[in-house]
Image 1 (cartoon, rainbow, N blue to C red):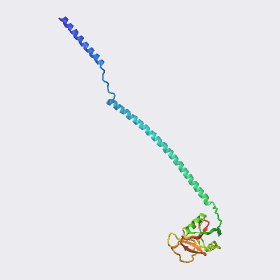
Image 2 (cartoon, helix red, strand yellow):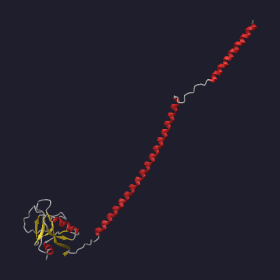
Image 3 (cartoon, rainbow, N blue to C red):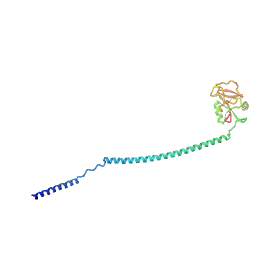
Image 4 (cartoon, rainbow, N blue to C red):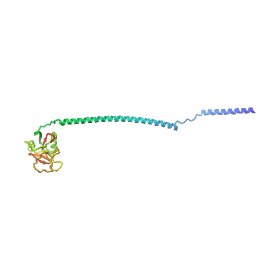
Length: 232
């Protein structure tokens, strides 16, 4: 009886071993499911790498932009310095030129001008013009409508001249106050010899006729007297 019991135990152990072996074989034959690649941990790790990469890229871009801005500012400053130097040089040249011409004797074409004392005068006897156009004509000749200093000078200017009306530099514009001044100096004229002591406050310009001064509308057309120099 013990003999059969022992045999039975051996068979039971054999069956258990065979079942265990088959189970291991089945487990080896059946593949385990793959662990997913994009797990939360993997995603977090990739995000951290991405943030670091973006940060590096941003820092590099900012550095390049700052370098470009510095180069541009440097070039702009250099251009500004050069422009300032050129402007200063130009100003010095202008001042030098003006000073040279200020003291340089001016040569004028005095053809047709008559010397009276130390000054030169021209009488226009061919073209009648308004007071304003006569003033412009004198300026184009390099002079100005005549400012007469005294009676002797007036007599010499118009000595032997045709018996015409000649505009001179006397006007009372823009005020209707009857006070005549020089348009060249803005001051009261140095000499008057009115034909009549009364002047019409609405007649703003004056001419010389028969060696006397008469007020007249500036729009009337008369001949005119110019002086060569640009000062009274």
